[in-house]
Image (cartoon, rainbow, N blue to C red; front, side, top):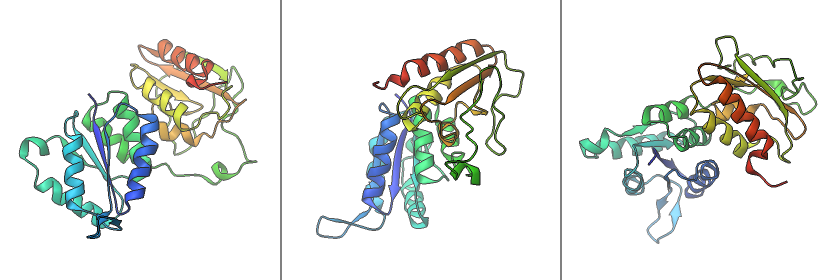
Length: 252
C-alpha cells in the first residue's frame, strides 16, 4: 500500500486532469478526483462539493494515509469541513496540504509511489513550488543541462542542491531518449533515488525532487551528471546511470 491523494478543485475537469497527470508517474498510488459540484440535473458545474470530497477521502482511506490537495479558497474550507466530520481514527491519517495543486500533486504522487510515509508525502507536496529564474525561460540562454564529463554542474541558486558533504561517487552520461528529462523520466529518477541512503544531486539540484529535476530542462543529447555522498552513494549513482542508459524504459 501507499499514501493516497485526493484532488479537490472547483472544476471537475481540472481535478480529473491532475489525477491523470500524476497517475503517469505514480501508477500504483490511489488518486481520487473530487472536483466540481452537481447542478441538480446530474451535470457538474463550477464549485466544490462536501459529498464529493467526503467520498474521495473514503475511497483513498484504505491506503497508508491520505493527503488532500485543493485549489482555491472555498475548496480549502470544504476540505476542512469534511475532515471535521471524519471519525477520529480516520482523521488521524488524513492531512490537508497547503500546496500548489498541480506541482504538489505530482511531487506527492512520486513520493508516495516510492513508498514514502504520510508526513514525507505531505512535505513533498508543500515544498513542490519552485521559483523560475529568467534564464530558465530562455531557450537560447545558458543550458544547465550541459555539464562536461569530469566537471560538476554548480547548484542553481535557490534550487536547493542536496549534497552537503564531499561527493564520494560521480558519473556523467548523455541523454539518448527522445524527450530528454521530462516528467516521467524525472519521476523515475526521483522515486528510485528516494530509496537510497545517500544525498544525490543531478546537475546541481536535488535528485530526489521531481520538480527540481524538471526545472533543468535537459533535452536529448545533453549531459546528465550525478554526484552522491553517503553510505549508498555508489549504488545511487549506478542507478542513475542505468536509468539513463536504458532511456528510462522509453522506446527508441
